[in-house]
Image (cartoon, rainbow, N blue to C red; front, side):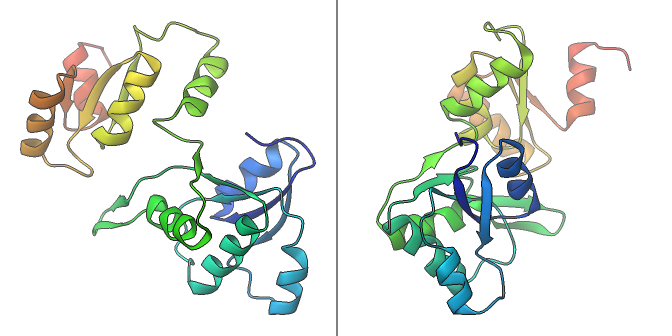
Length: 197
């Protein structure tokens, strides 16, 4: 979604920076940079895109910088719109929550690069060099993004109950949405598919 030479303000972690730089775009700053406000405001002018992803350093100043760049004309792109993020200690706010704050503050609807949206589906098809993904499996712990992505790309879907939803919730979602499998985790998927490991 970016072109070489575009100037990008990153509201995300190191993975977002790496992805931006890998296409030749220029990271002009990060919203969690602690340098002076004057230096930040000078570097935040003429931004082509603001890329938002999950990061634990998001704060009011991050939102101010990102939304100001978007109001000045930068394209707002989110890596995903997941409201929450599962951790070993429970569910926490996700990248979608950060993106929602910036979108609200800027008054601009974001473009979502990640699942379940078409840009990610196009990337998967290009990376695999396969146009028909009907024999492939998408495995994820969130029906709203992972299951929807399986539909976007035309793949089979297995909902893992080891992340966002428990087994009871996963079975209820399967009953409602009629996808192929509910699994505990990737090992359970392999077992259910009868693949030797």
